[in-house]
Amino acid sequence: MRIILASKSGVRKKILNDHNMDCEVIVSNVDEDEVKNSLLAEGADPLIISKNLAEIKSIKVSTNHPNKLVLGADSVISLNNKLINKPRSRDEALKILKKLNNTKHELISSVCISKNGAMIWNHTDTSELKMKNFQDKELIEYLNKIKTETLLAYGVYQVEAEGSQLFEYIKGDHNSIMGLPINDIINFINKYNK
Image 1 (cartoon, rainbow, N blue to C red):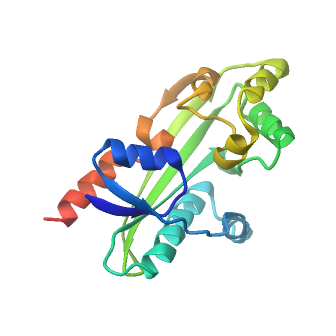
Image 2 (cartoon, one colour):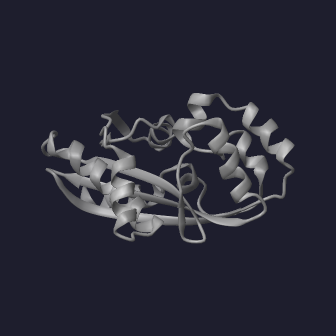
């Protein structure tokens, strides 16, 4: 199965490759902050923001690649239905972890497949995570294990790596939490190709 991935996420590309999907990466270069700020100003919740970002990325790349299936994806953290953005600095990352400390929150992963500049399918998965209770010192130690560029690109926790130790429990599909609800994507593509 061939698909264009409108994301620079190495984790998403690996999930596709691990499931025998041949993907070409073409980054959408959508200004995510601009889109989020615009949607927040309209009162959008984290789920709507995630869905919209996945769709915008997918459609933008799809417009320039006729007759190809283009997959856009986005994941956001929702705490009490409020969006938690990716950190812009290590200090901000620590503030985010302090907010999430000893609380339940949701990780919303949205995907959209477009063809010829129009969405043909989308799907959103919501997972629930509860962070353990940590001292500030422990959170700082955790952050010190993560490279700055990784932290700023992927957010405060990498569940596939050191981040798994942060949680009391994680309820949801593992691949969705990593950024792609792959089983739903494969089911759609199999039906589409029939």
